[in-house]
Amino acid sequence: MDIKQISAREKALFAAGLAILLLLVSIPFNIYQKKQIGTNPLDIRLVEERVERERDDSIDVLVIGDSESYTSVSPMQIWRERGYSVYMCGQPGQTTAGMLEVLSASLSTQKPKVVIMETNSLFRTRHDLDQLQDMMAERVASVIPVFQYHNLWKHLINGSGNVNIKKNYKGFVIRTDIKPYEGDGSYMKLSRKEKKISRANKDAFYKMLELCKKHGARLVLYSAPSPRNYNMEKHNRLKRLASENHLHYIDMNIKELGIDWRRDTADGGDHLNISGAEKTTAYIERILDREGLVDHRPDGAYAGWDKLSDRYYHYAAKEIKRIRNKTFGRQTG
Image (cartoon, rainbow, N blue to C red; front, side, top):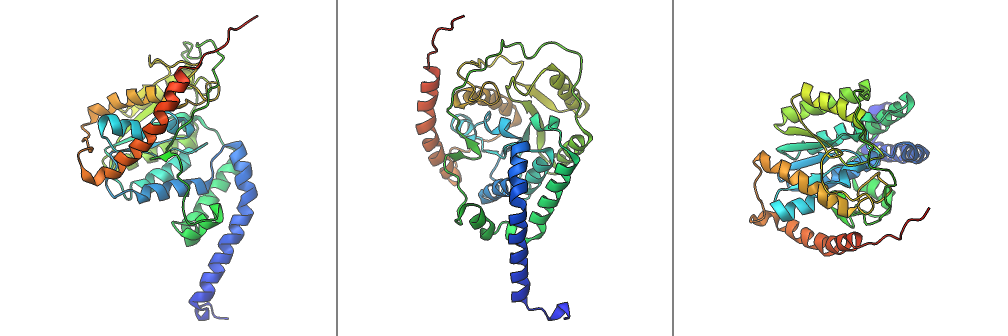
């Protein structure tokens, strides 16, 4: 049969069938992948979809990274205290390849003055097979319309045409658990050594840097407080990377932010909870004050941000108070 004689309906049915088959085949891989490194190509689509919903050219600052990012920078706090529009694009277990894709998609509708990159993903190492599978999955998602900005794939994911954004505040999710970090606080011991950044991660980093330059956005690097993820060897490498590229690098692991490692971490020093995030966000606000950003709070076009901020603080304020009032039993032994 001449392929030209195939009807448009048959082509659409074939494409839909192929997409569903690929989704079914990818389920075991996605489960495996999330166990290994957390990133799921469909998670990337959800973030891109949420950013696309924002009014064009309305975002001042994009934040990219893995879970260290979306547990340490709260857009609603920045909005309430400064009026800057910040959107959090972080995802669990994000890779530099995923960060690059999200940044590229976001810059197609937004013109941020600043892009803030949380640096943990720069040290994430991947097996070559994992990287190949990611590339294939992302390629499929980009060439088959059923996966790209189409309601069908959202139905397949969660059974409805609506993306679940409950308790999601411009990409930030409030974490309220308390699990103290048991270390002695000396995880940033002095060292002259440097932690290696893989070639693949460096390549992705430089592509993101070029994207920022092309779109007129200033790239800022920061490391969220995390005894589980950071040490002085990583600090040294990141400091040199920033210096070589004339970038501002903020390492919150060596800043005095008032982090209380008994109360301010949700999981023993890996991620911050909302109490810790309030402290790190306050520091980020002071950095953004230097960028000449505009206070949008008087602008009626941002009225939705005020409403979301009210909902955020109704919940967050109570949780922060609860966390900071928590008492711990006397240790024995």
